[in-house]
Length: 125
Image (cartoon, rainbow, N blue to C red; front, side):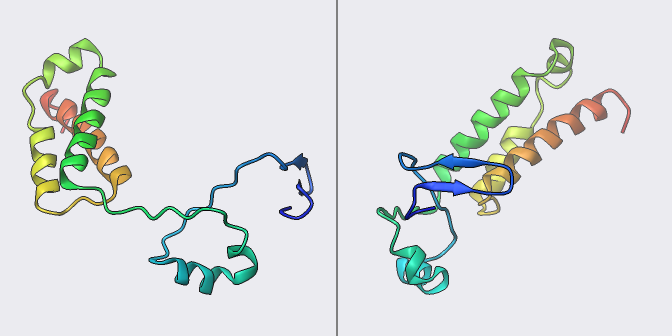
């Protein structure tokens, strides 16, 4: 694919000459990436961007944006039922205590907590 500019599998043939291919990994260094991926594939990377941990302040911003987005998708009736809930402050405290590093997990937990609050207020749980 890299040499020919064409990707072929059993269903498709795709010209990838002008494509940007992004590889993500959890390697802690470029040396580890080369060691474990192998020099032939690693040598084809033209740029390497190292990502750092997301700061606590940024995690709180992400949690707040997720909360606002999820809350805004609720019906007005459900919003009224849980208007003064403590979901966001609870998760902000968890973030400050160092619990959340995985932002997908955080979003899912906030969504679950909002749904739980609705069920709790309605007397279902």
